[in-house]
Amino acid sequence: MAENKKKTIGQQQTSWSPLAWGLVMGIVFGFLLQKGGVTKYDVILGQLLLTDFTMVKIILTAILTGMIGIYAMKSLGWVELSVKSGSWGMNGIGGLIFGVGFALLGYCPGTIAGAIGNGSLDAMVGGLAGIWIGSGLFAALYPKLRSGILKKGDFGDLTLPKLFKVNDWVVVIPAAVLIVVVLIWIEMAGL
Image (tube, rainbow, N blue to C red; front, side):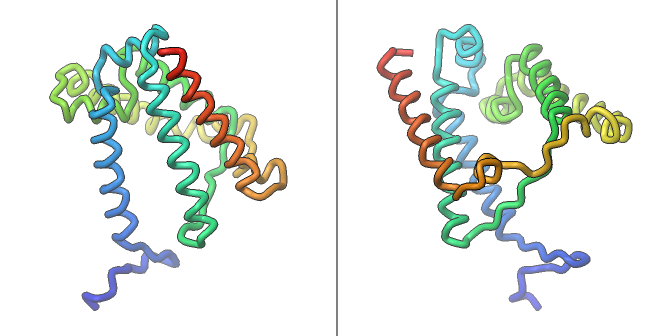
């Protein structure tokens, strides 16, 4: 029994292995955010003022790495993607909550966690409080939102490869090339 790491919950089987990998990847991601300097308020403010493109470079590098890694693992049969259904209403509400929090404090959720790890008092007090209050308000309003605005413009579990009816790599490779070109341009422009 101790050898079996999987537990059955209803019809689903869960394993601690994905959780452990998630924890390890979260720690690595946080470490890289901190090393990249994007947990510092001045870097975030510089990005918002379009004077420091450190955040854009890190975000694009993370998207590039994640996109190639996920689709490579999918092609090898190591993972199976389960795309969550979406809608314009969900994106609008999520963007509004994210944008208001970012505008008020100058941190996004990932950089809040990194800044707390750095000992930033503003992230610890304002950021953590904002996450709790925002999450609580959303949870309280969710029953009304889910049948209303969150359903507006439902587009299901659509992905670009599914939309264009092509192999994943037909979208991933040009997207990766475009990201690399943008990163090179940002570096050459000295941004």
